[in-house]
Each structure stands twice: as structure tokens, then as C-alpha cells.
Image (cartoon, rainbow, N blue to C red; front, side, top):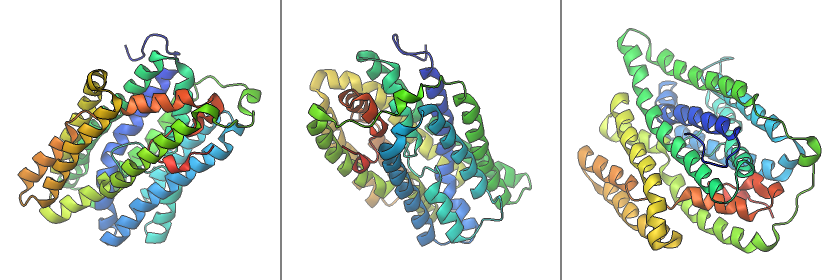
Length: 356
């Protein structure tokens, strides 16, 4: 049920790993600004730490694209899982980390994700593995399920933001309750490490081949990279962490209410993944991308100028409703265009780090 026909069985492990990461990303992105403010940091520091997570992720993708072919994919995925575990435990205060500069370094080096989509080092590694797990239309369906599972589990994970509030009402200090959530994030990294240990290991000589140029696909990849760069730049202005910070400061939103807000927005986004292929078949991929972005952008502008929280919430949720620009098909197309040794960087969120 989880895998499309024709996909390799080990792709199931990647989908389960994606689900676990998305669930933790769903609550960590919302809790991060509250946690940092509770530690005594200011809004400016919260923004810098959120930026550091994205910048570090981009540079990690450059490193994977440059040198990743020299190592077995399984080894890199296991290393990423350990990095996720270390990120969660260090942010939770292991080793006495609580000042701005140590937290900034952890955010830059680690796997923390402040946005609704996956921007960690896992993404190019899992994409490369997924591209080898299926071919043709089966690859597109596999990427569709990967995207849908991630969006659905991220939406569900956002509901877990109410847990610290419940623990605080039960008598636990707010800071300790928030730290427990980051411990859960780190333990999820350990669980993913155990999960990915079951992945079959590719032979070293298959991984050690030197990269080949993109060849005929060069022009396609450059055009897609330019297109995704514009979209990623705009998306970076409204990552979930900064949006949550704005809602907390502007409307004094509770953690439970914020979780519900992001749950419904994420659920609508996940549903749009199912509608996108049907729309694309009728009006084409380009038209789907363009004509769904227009109402989405209008709703975002309306949300910015709305005075009341209910109106703002409705506009923000409506923004997630139009079918997304078939991200699964674009990712599948990128990976199918690139030679196997170039699939390390088939990544939507940081196209500027692609190498050719």
C-alpha cells in the first residue's frame, strides 16, 4: 500500500524515515521561537538562528553534491541520522548549551528545519536513493507519496506543540517542558539511524565513480534551478518558525492554538498534493504552477493586512488550498534528467547549490 508498483522494497524505509522526520519538524519549527525566547534571547537572535539553519543546510547540500559520490549513500544517511540526534540533544541543553553563539553554531551545523518543507541534508540523500528505487512513472508516484507523507506527518506533528502546555499545566517548568520536545527530536534521530541500518549497502566502486556532467539535461536543470530559486527565496521569508513568532507576538497565541493553525494549513497543503496531478493532466505542469501560485500569493497578502486573527487564519489556510506546483513531478523530472551520479543534488529547496 505504501509503495507504488515497481518500486524497490527498501524505499519503504525511506518513506518511514521521512514520516518520522516530518512529524518532529512539525512541532520543532513552531516551538523553536518560544524556546529561544524562554532562554532569554531576543527576536533578532531568533531570526538569525532560523537563518543559520537554512544557510547551513544549503552549504551541506553543496558538500553532498561535491563529495557525496565518494561515500556509500547508506553511510551518509546514517551520519545524517546521528547529526539529527546530536542537534536535538544539544539544543535541549546537553552540555550546558544555552547562549546565543553556541546555539547559532548548532543550528548552522545541525539538521533543524524552520520551514514547512524539508530543507535538511537528508533531502538530497533520500532523493538520490529514491531515484534509484523506481523508474519511469513509478518514480513519479514514489516521489508523490514521499511528498504527501512528509506534508501529512508535518501537519500532524504540529499538533504536538500542545504537549509542553499540558506539561506546564501539570506543574513542570515551561523551559523543561520545551526541552523535552527537543530531546524527543534527538531520540527520533536515533530511531532513524536504527531504521536506515536496514538499508542495503551499495558497493563502493559504484559510489566512487567520478561525477559526470549533466550533458543534454544541463539546460533543463539550469532553467528549473532558476525557477526554484525565485520560489525558494520567497518561501524563506515566511518559514514556519518566523510565522509562529509573529503569531505569538502579535496575537498572544497559545501553543495549542498555534498547533491547530499549522495543522490545518499543513493538512490543506497535503491535500493539494493529491489534487495537483489531476489538475496538471488537464492544464499542464507550467499552468498548474503559475495559476495556483497567483491565488496563493493573493491570500498571503490578504493575511498580512488582516486585522483580526480569524480573518488572518482563514486567508493563510486558503493559501494552502490551491494544488501545489506538483513538486513530486518536478523532483522526479530533475532526478530522471540527471545521471545517477548527479542525483545527489536533485533538491528543490536549495537549487543554487546544484553542481554541473
